[in-house]
Amino acid sequence: MLSHMLSNESVEPQGELAQIDRIRRLARVPRGSSIVLGIGDDCAIFRQRGATEDLVFTTDMLIEDVHFRRKTHRPEDAGWKALARGLSDIAAMGAAPRFCLVSLALAPWADSNWVNGFYRGLLRLAHREKTVLAGGDLARAAMVMCDIVVCGSVARGQALRRDGAHAGDGIYVSGALGGSALGFSRLRLNKRADKAQQRHLKPEPRIALGRFLRGKVRATAAMDLSDGLSLDLHRLCLASGLSAEIAAPPVFPGASKEQALHGGEDYELLFTALARAIVPGSFEGLPLTRIGTMRKGRPGAVFLDGTPLPPLGYDHFRKP
Amino acid sequence: MLSHMLSNESVEPQGELAQIDRIRRLARVPRGSSIVLGIGDDCAIFRQRGATEDLVFTTDMLIEDVHFRRKTHRPEDAGWKALARGLSDIAAMGAAPRFCLVSLALAPWADSNWVNGFYRGLLRLAHREKTVLAGGDLARAAMVMCDIVVCGSVARGQALRRDGAHAGDGIYVSGALGGSALGFSRLRLNKRADKAQQRHLKPEPRIALGRFLRGKVRATAAMDLSDGLSLDLHRLCLASGLSAEIAAPPVFPGASKEQALHGGEDYELLFTALARAIVPGSFEGLPLTRIGTMRKGRPGAVFLDGTPLPPLGYDHFRKP
Picture (cartoon, each protein chain N blue to C red):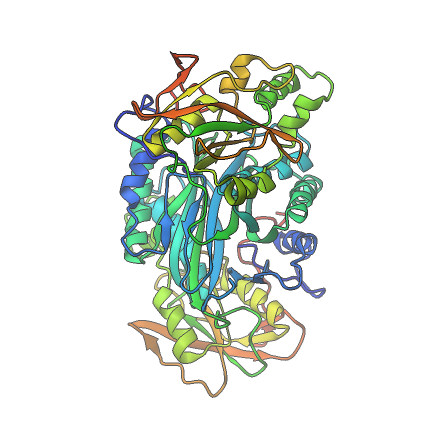
C-alpha cells in the first residue's frame, strides 16, 4: 500500500515517502466519505452504511526482477508471495481476510504451465487463509507483473493503525529479523535450500497474530515489516508523531545485525502496546520480543542503543 | 476484470477465455461466501452482513505499449484512461463508484513530472465521478504498468450482470462504435487531434447511463464494450446461454464497419432489455440503438444479418 504519511521532519525527502505524500495531498479524502482512512497505512479503511464491520483494503505489486526472479522462484513461489504480501498488510490491521483480486501481466516466456503454477501457489495460501479469489485481470506485457488486492474485515473502528502509539508504549516485534535478506543472498549464490531461503521464498503472513494483538493485547499501533525495521519503524514513528528508542532486535540464525535492522520482506509484525499491557513472550510458538519504547521527540527519529538509526530499509525511489 | 464464463461450446478455446476458465475452476467460490458473483463478469459482487447495498469490484491494468504509448499519450491521458477503464466496468453493473486503489510501477524514463501528470489526469476524472483515491502501491520496473481497482455500490441484488438476458430480449448499444479504433489508427499516423483521437485518448465511462439502465429501463443484462462488439456480445451470449441476431451497429463518423464490429476500447454499454421494455432513443444526448434480438440457439453464437460473426475483438492471448 501507499503507506506513509510524511511529516515536515522526514529524514528522507527525495524517496518513495515524498512521492506518496504528493499523491496523498492531491487525492484529498472528502469529509463524510466512507473512506475512514486513506493513503498512509498498510490498508485503507472503508465503512459501509449499516455494516457492523469495517472493510480494509490493500494492494501490492509483485514484479519480475524486483520482487521475484524467474531463475530462483518457482511459479508456485511467486504466486504464494504475491498473496502473502497482501495478507501481511491485512494481518497488520488485525483484520480477517475475505477476498482477493489478482491482476497478472504475462511476459512471452510465461507459458500456461507457469501461469497454472502461479495460481496453484496463490490458491494454496488463499484456501488456507479462507480468502476467495473473486476476480482480476489478465494481459500480455514485456515482463511478468502481478498486482493483488486483498479485502479484509474487522470490527467497526477496531482496526490497528500506525498512528495510534503513545509516548511510553512498549515496541515489539514478532519472530526474528533478517531471515529473508539472508535467504535472498543465499539464493543468488545458488546455495542449497535452507530455512532462510524458505523464509524469502514463502513468507508467512501473521494473520492469527494480528487478530490476537487487536483483540487480546489491545496493541496501540501495528504494521508489517516489509521494507526493513529501520525504515518501517521510522514510518510508524512519523505516523504517531513520536520517536523511538530501541535495542537490537532478535536476529534470524545466520543473519547479520545489518540484515536484521535493514533487510526487507520478513513480514513479521511490528507493534506497540501500553506500558501496562500484558504481552506474552510468544504466540502459537512465535516469539514476541520487546525491543524498545516510544518517546516524545522528533517525529520519525529512531535511536538504537542511544545512536540515531538511519532508515536504510528498502525504498524503490531512493536515489542510489 | 477476468470477465468470462466459458461454456463447452466456446468458439475460442485457446485464448484468454480458456485461460480465465482454468483460473475460475481453480478458484471455486465456497457456498455461503460473501462473494455473490466471482470471476466471469465486469465486476465481482460482495455482500456484507447488515449492509443495504452490494459492493462491486473491478480491476484493470494499463500497460505501456499495450494500452498506452509514451509517444502518443500524455501522462494525463494515461492516468485518465487507467481510471476510465475501471469506471466503465462499474457503469456496466449499474453501480455508483465509491473509491479506487492505484498501483503504479514506474519505468526509469517516468520522472516525477510524468507521475504528477498521471495522477492529475486520474484525479480529474475521479473528482468528477466522486471516486476517492484511497490507496495503492508504487514500485520501480522496466516499464510503466498501472493496475487500478474500483469499488462501486449498488442496491442489494440489483447489479446488472451478463447472465440475465432472455430469449426475445432486445439488444442495444449506446453511442456509435469504432471511434477508438479509428482514433488509434490516426494517432499512429501522427495526424492532427480530432474527435476519434479524443475518443481513444479520453474514453468516457457511462456511469449515469448504467444507473439509468438499471433503475429505469430495468435492463436484463449489460456489459461494457472494451474488446469489440463481436467478442463482447459473444461473451454476453455465453454468460446468458443464448445466441444473438444483430444488424450492423451505429458506426462512429469516419470509422469502418470492421472497426465498429471488432474495434476495442469504445467503452460504450451493450445491454439487453425485455421486448416490452421502453428504451428511449437517447439518454442525456447519447443515442441508444437497438441492434438485434437474443435468441435460443448455440450459446455464444452471434449472427450479423443472418451470417455468423466471428468474435474477432481484442484478445491478449489469441495465437497470432
